[in-house]
Amino acid sequence: MVRGLYTAASGALVAQSMVDNVANNLANVNTTGFKKTLLQIQSAPSMDIYRVQTDPGQTSKSALPGVPTAQYVGRLGTGSWVYDTPTSYEQGALQSTGNPLDLAISGTSNAFFTVATPNGIRYTRDGEFVKDAQGVLRTQDGFAVLSTQGQPITLQGQGDITVANDGTVSQNGLPLAQLQLTSFGNLLNLRPEGANNYVVSGNAGPAPATGASVQQGFLEKSNANVVRSMVDLITAERWFDANEKSIKTQDDATQTAITQVAKTQ
Image 1 (cartoon, rainbow, N blue to C red):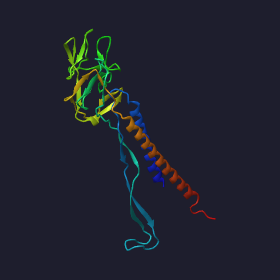
Image 2: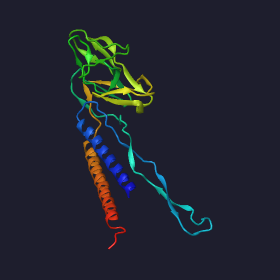
Image 3: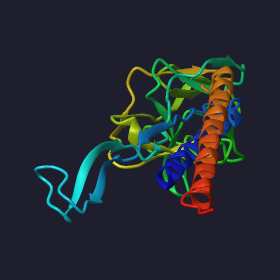
């Protein structure tokens, strides 16, 4: 019965993790370039169960009097746990803004803007850029947007800014730099860091992106789906309730065993 309590408790904890994950996706449904996270659940290791007993007499040809026997009963599951929370990088819908510094990547979900942060190079799909007082193109959090030369892109004074589909930034018709778009050989090793940025973890294999098209005057919306998230929340709630009832039932059975079994009149 104690094993059952732990098994049900592990299911309740997974359901709680599911709620936390869905809540984070819902909170960022209006965040530009946000990519939802998924929940991968894994069964906890199972164990072999045996009925061990010592009989005073011989019970079978293979059993000796007074020698313990272990009869195999079967396998027992021990619950579940969260294996990973990978990111879904599928393309979000594009929204027209008309702002020349708003940029979106289309054509592939495996392409990212490259930015410089105090902690090193990071990657983002959030193309809601601004120009600072020195003309440097930056993210909303103040991180410099890098060119293919690995340098911050700097705009020169005033003038019309155009961005071609290949990421070439021009001002008054004169090319200034080209956006550094990066793709990865293994997106599983690209992990969210916060501030809508992603950091390389392990062998992600960064390389210049191919097949990507930059859309000026557009922003990529979050790929989180409100309806799907609400359904997942209901599922998680029912999942938690089922495990909670299982815990209560097993706790009642344990109490009965303690207070009633072998009770003498």
